[in-house]
Length: 157
Image (cartoon, rainbow, N blue to C red):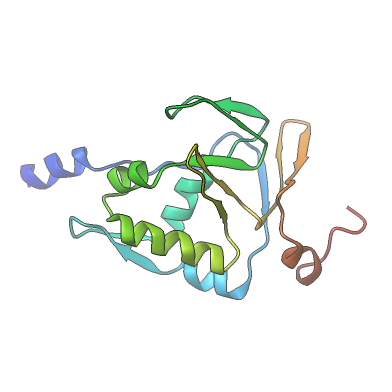
């Protein structure tokens, strides 16, 4: 029992969603199906795909900022997140090939859009329509047109 507890303490604590009072997400059927699936970690644990998505989403900037978490500072707009495959590999304890597959799958179902660069890689979240914190409402500048037509549209908002 102590060994299990000790190993659990060393495991990465997935990030949770914080910073806003309301988040409006539009999902395709494929995205919903993907989110209820699971992924195996390198050390034999099973983690829900929703947990992985929420971990990435928790990195999203709610307002424009300069990211200092990596080698070079990067100006990020609201709705963007900076990431590193190496960092995700270490935190999630999942191999880089699996990380790439997960990101590709998320992109295929419309949850994220990946922008790779030699300077810095960023994610945007086309499935996020808008978010609110306090009295401030921010419409996601990276929301996907797929969702504006098929899920009720932006007209009248």
